[in-house]
Length: 217
Image (cartoon, rainbow, N blue to C red):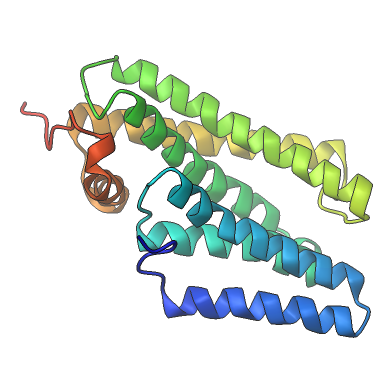
């Protein structure tokens, strides 16, 4: 089994660019840029590595989304100061990541029930999804604080105001993800997000053995 199946050449190119940027920065003694490059690369590789550890298959859109998120948030945000240059950069990243992490949480919670839509009330699964997304968002805030304190970055910007604003946006994104999961369970909603959820479930059927394709009204 390949470690990162069906990996897009563009993703491989981006990973290679981050690796090269890190070594070039080391050569010019740009320690901060080197650190940001290697951290971005490491976090981008984390999802496929964890998926391989747990024998999960990741759809290509998921790999693209996670890679672009870490690249935009850490590399562009810190190395090229996009957080200061583009006022909505931080809000957009936190909002989109909260939705993404929420949907990931939904898939993991649904996996615990082996894909059985009727094993737990959809409202309960939606509530757990919201909690998972908020937990990940709070963990990211701790990560930002750690980077600022121990490595001299400025990911929190204005401190408390930035953190609370991020958590509020995380809450809205988490709510969106939980409602999406609820609709998917009760109405088998189609659309782009519904197809992405179904894609992940279909390629990981062994974890969703009780999965039912559609609900009959």
